[in-house]
Length: 461
Image 1 (cartoon, rainbow, N blue to C red):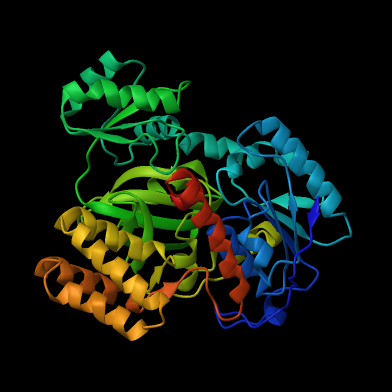
Image 2 (cartoon, helix red, strand yellow):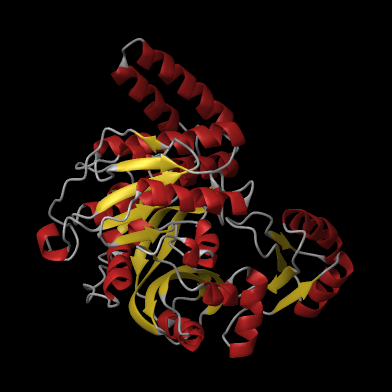
C-alpha cells in the first residue's frame, strides 16, 4: 500500500518560536497525518517535519499534497472514508500496523478532517504503540453534530442564537414563526455550509427543509435565528478544560461568495471570545484542539454568540501557524508529553491567502456586481491571443485599457484595486521556498473544482 515519493524528511530550523529541531524533538519521533490531500495536512506536515519529526501521510486518494512535500517521508493509501466507515477504519488500522511497525519510537496518529470523530471513536483499536491526537469521543459527542451542540449550549447557558430542532416542514414553519424571520435552516451533520439556507419567509421554508432533510435524513433539522455582528473564528488548544493557547481570525475574502471558504484571512484580537469558549469547553473539561465560529460585533463589551464548534483542525490552520501559534506542534507535545509548551505571543494583523482562489473570489464579485462581465471577457480573450503570440506587453495593455476605459464602473475598479492591496502582503498558503514541490498539491483542488463545480469539503472550514 506504500506510495513511493521523491521526498525525504530533513530536520531544519523551525520558523516558529525561534527553536531549532535539535532543541525541540529527537529524530526518532514520528507522526501519521491523515487526509493527506488537504492544505491542513500540508500545514501539519511542514510544522512537524521542520522540527525533525518523521511525517507519514495517508489518504484514500493518491492525489495528496503530502506526496510532494519534502517534509513527508512516505505516504500510504487506505479504503475510502465516505463509502463504508467500518471498512475504512479496518483498512486504516491495518495499514498503520503494517506501514508503521513498533520499533520503540513515540508514534502519534493525528487526524485532520472529518475523520477525527471516527478515529476518536476507534482510538482503542489502534496498535498500543500509537497515540491518537484527538479529543475523547465522549467530548466530541457533546458538540457535534449541530443538534448535540444545540442541546449542550442550552444546558450550559452559553450565548447562542435561538435554535429549534424539528422533524418535519410544518414544525420548521412553526419554529420560523416563533423565532422570527429570517432564519437559517441547517442539516446537523453536513459540513462546509452544505444544505444551510437562509429563509426569509414562511413560504420558502418547505424547500429549505426538504434540502436539509435530503442531506441529513436521520437527525433533527435545526432552525436557527440570526445573531448580530460578523463572523469570527476562535481557535484553541485545551488540556483538561484549561485553555493553553488561542488565537482568532476573520475572513476578509471568501469563495465562492458570501459564507464560502475563507481565501484571505486576518488575525485579530479575540476580545471576549475566549471567555465565551470557556463557558462551554471548561465545563466539558475539553482536551485537544478546537475551532469555534462566533457572530460578534467586534466591540469588547458586546457578547459573542456561538454558532458552531469543530472538534478538529480548521481550514485556517495555516493562518494560525503564520500568526505564531503552531498548533500541530503544541498538540503533538501534549499527546507525547502530557504538557503543552508555552506558546509565543500571537501576531495580530497577520494575513494569509490561498493561491488562485482568493483572486477568483474578487473576480466572482465583480462579475455579479457590475453586469459588464461580457465586455471584460472579450478584452480577456483578446489579451490571451496576444499573449500566445508572445506579445505579453500588448496583452497587459489590452486588459489595462479595458479596465481604464470603463468596461468596469469606477466603483468596481476601485473595489478590485482595494482587494488586491489587501492581499498584497498576505503570505500564500501552499507555496513556500523551502518546500516548492508541494505546490503540485493544488492539482487536487483544481481537478475537483473542474469535475464537481465546487470546492472540496476539506476547504470549507
